[in-house]
Length: 309
Image (tube, rainbow, N blue to C red; front, top):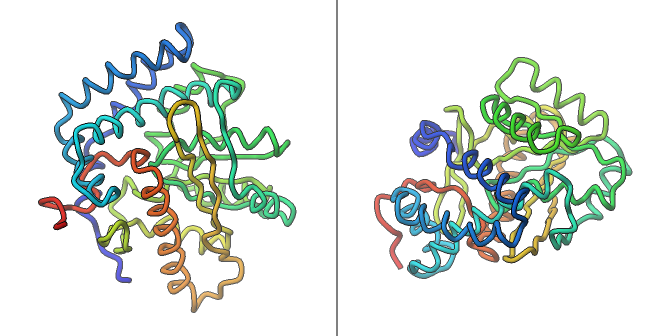
């Protein structure tokens, strides 16, 4: 697969996700002051607002849902999509404050994490803007001493650090700002310590190379950077998704993607292609299973019109 820039990625990068952080602030206050049931009632008002006054997000939802559902999206589908986004942000408050008793979280593929910890060396967890990445924190209940770090772009890192400090200063995870000179060294050190380092690998803030990978019936330009980083570090890569099923139910899923510790340099690019394909397949499977969990509210495929039926 040939790497190429993505005008779609550039478009979303110019539109910071202010709504995400603003909604998190609002839901933090509601959740902590009024409780989860009351907070979920307010979610319907928030969802209605976004449905009415966010036309670009509404149009992008319609395009994506047509792919994931295999049929034209109805207004109820779009409402459910936006509501799921709001619900996972709402529940983020409980995950970040470790109030796991408020939620029903199951784990699939935990043996893979146990094996990685047994052999040492840590792993990169490649997630996506899908469901709740924070649901991984529940894994610590069954994996005492588990170390988790998050690698994200510096601006987002500052925002999430400020929010975490306000919610629960004692439970802040380590955040490694990507795009800094020492980011790669810090990630390498954390992997050597046996930590899991989470990366959202479905999009990037920079204009780095991308490769078209089949996703929901059409090529999607995914960033190569996270996979090249994994190859350079000789790291194991695991797909991770925190799937929201509605109500208080979540499933944290782990699937193997690649083990670059066994890949020689001449075979690196082919191994990157294979890893990107496996990642996209795992993500597509999750999108088919729980369509309302995809939270890329922009034209991810660069479509001018809905795909033909």
